[in-house]
Image 1 (tube, rainbow, N blue to C red):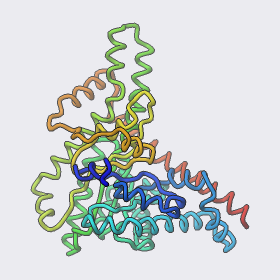
Image 2: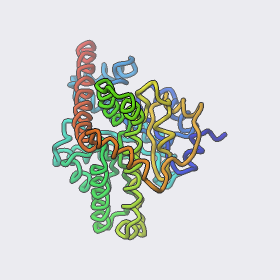
Image 3: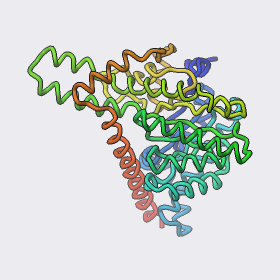
Length: 374
């Protein structure tokens, strides 16, 4: 029986799960989610931190490795690689059935390397070789140092998920890095039909930042008219920004440069909507699913958002050809000195720091258990 997720896929948007843990791998839950229409999965340090902290599913592996004398980083490496390998194997049939379009599992490089090109390349190569699965995607952040790493990795045939994209500028640079990398791979006579990439746009964090600034202006205003205008802008920045990015995608991948690569077998680099759970309880709980439905995209959702969408979502194209309404939202924010580009720059810095903090927290949790089991 087809679910709403299957219908979403048929429309042209691939639903991925934004969570991984030992429990959902061992208990057959991933297979059930695939049956319901999920066609990929993403992970990051925050997700692994939550998975290790919230139960005992990793305790047997941590105990065994601790008793073998492994340190916390070696244990982290072992348990994450095991999870990703197993998830890749579970999603391999999806990868094969979709002709290499979906069925991917994403693993992030060490977040401490976000501003280090050469070490990012080495770490991504190490992980790709160790896991040795065709449907693995390595996540590289969209920093200035990350873009050249993306090019090199793609040129070597390594699938890349470019993550922590907030702004149109970051997106354009991500698309260029993809095109440069695929062109180099093609020149090396690699099979570019086997190389995939997504550009992960982080959505809800933009609204959280903008809404906070709008609320401050509302509290400082004495004008009821101005307060009403400011309230009308709340919850609109992230979608407007995302819609503008999607239009950049359509423009870039309609140019001759990509068409020539497509004739040689290249896929488009799809836009992936990330951070799509609704943070503000006043907003529709599937806001960042409904308002971002578009062809040739991915939406990676936590399980509660998936369940909500299955319960009361609907499928309708959400991004019109013209952009006047989205431009109006962004220009009205500019008029109020709320500059999306500046906000996105800060969100990138904050995003890297958040992953670093989660990575440190995860290592600390592992260390506590390691000492306990020695």
